[in-house]
Length: 147
Image 1: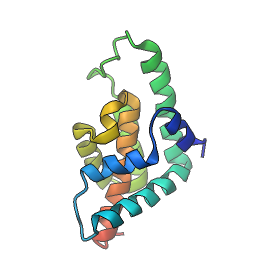
Image 2 (image 1 turned 60 degrees about the vertical axis):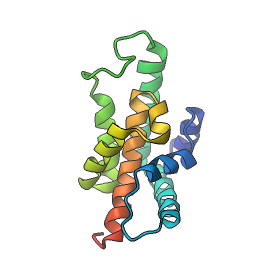
Image 3 (image 1 turned 90 degrees about the vertical axis):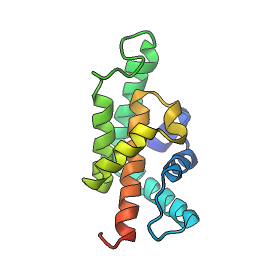
Image 4 (image 1 turned 180 degrees about the vertical axis):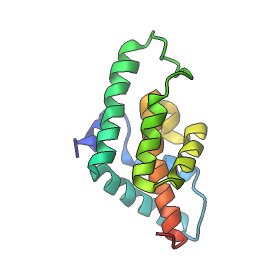
């Protein structure tokens, strides 16, 4: 949808790196690490096909370019506390995929910024953190029989 995986790659974000970042904070819930990584990769792929998730990710890609990359010397270059739209996009992606629990998972990934997340600008780090959080939250819920 919206060629979002290609657009992410153009911004230096590969699916394998998203999975790797997710696995840095993985909490075993009865699923072996290799199996969890495989299932997360599947969930991420499925999420990228969702028009709601894809459109939010596209918004982050475009905002990253317009408000961050093109304005490196602006007041938002260092992701100031008054910039909230990036967090809102990340939380929305997490919740679309994984429901309310995913918002808490988003906070973990947003604060620790594992793997590729620490290399991204203010919009894409939160959008990808939301993608990870939604998918890991679903994985955890499924492993506990809640879904």
